[in-house]
Structures are given as C-alpha cells and as structure tokens.
Length: 212
Ligand SMILES: [Fe+2]
Image 1 (cartoon, helix red, strand yellow):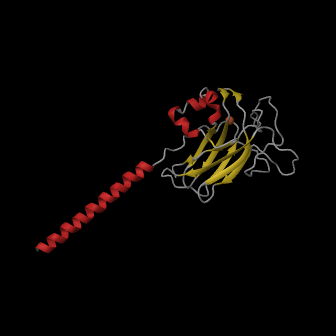
Image 2: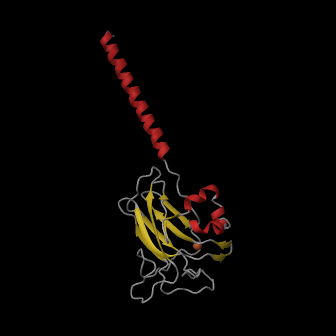
Image 3: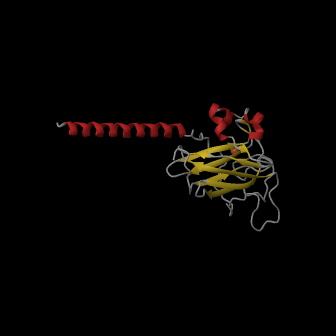
C-alpha cells in the first residue's frame, strides 16, 4: 500500500468512525427525546355497542334537541404523539363517558342515576395534521361500581398508525378521589400520564402517547 493510499484509507476509516459516532450521537439524542407511552387501562363494561346517531366532537349537543346536556361544560384538547414525540395525524379516537349524574347510556349500567337524553356520551373523531384533537363535553361524575367508587374519567380507544391503545383520562382537580380509585391506583407511578392538565377554567389538555 502506498503512503497516500494508506492515508486515504485512514481518512476513510476516520470518516466512517465519525459517521458512526454521529449516528450513535443521534441515537442517544433520539432516545433522550423518547416519551413514555400512555398506560393502557381496561375497556370496562360500558363500551357503547349501541351507538347514538351522532358521534361528533360536541357531546353536549344533539341535533334536533332543544337542550344542551346537563352538567358543567368542559373542553378537552390534546395531541396524539408517537413515542418519539412526533404527531400522529389521522389517529382514530373513540371516547365515551357517563353523564353528569354518573350514568352510562348502556344496558349494562344498572345505576339508578338518571339518563340524560341530551347527552351524546360518545364521540368518534380523528386527529389533525399536528396530531391535535378537541372535544366539548360535560365533566363526568364519579360512580359506584363493583370494584368500588370510580373517580371521574373519560374512556378512550385510540388507533394510531400501528398501535391501538385503550385507556382512561382522569382529571387533575380530582386528585383525592383519583388516589382512592382501584383502576387508577393499579397504574402506580404511570398513573400521572393519564391525568389531564388544567388549561384554564373548564379546559383540560391531555397528550396521548402511542408506540406508533
Ligand atoms: Fe367508566
């Protein structure tokens, strides 16, 4: 091998090593940016098999009804992200919840709390270009269940690119009852990732982190 060939191969090696180090660096940076995924939760007994005619993002109004749903109207916004923090656009979100009295519009719910004919109770929406989504609903009540008192929550079934997550969103202003809820407690330290952030009066914000 001539000296300049040798030099070339040394340079090539240095270049390769540099490229590898850069890749490794990028890998480390990428790992550092990785987000913890939102923990999954049970689908529960009240997934709405029998759907209302309407499933839009405003659960407080049903077309043709004179009245808005009873309860405190809230807005919940958020994004669907993958584990690298990239937005997941076009994710399918289905969500369902009980009404302001703690009753699900579902035949399995034997609670004696009244149904609210003006409450939609279910929505099927999709995330936008930046993974964003938004609903208007009413703050769900807590309710008694065979596993004890359930703290207020909204059920979510989210399908991203390749990952489907079934979970529940909790409220930051219900800390004391959250802490006593069996399903919430079951998540241990991961539970914080299912709690929305207060975002002004009657507004909440919650990012859902999928694997992909
Ligand atoms: Fe529930």
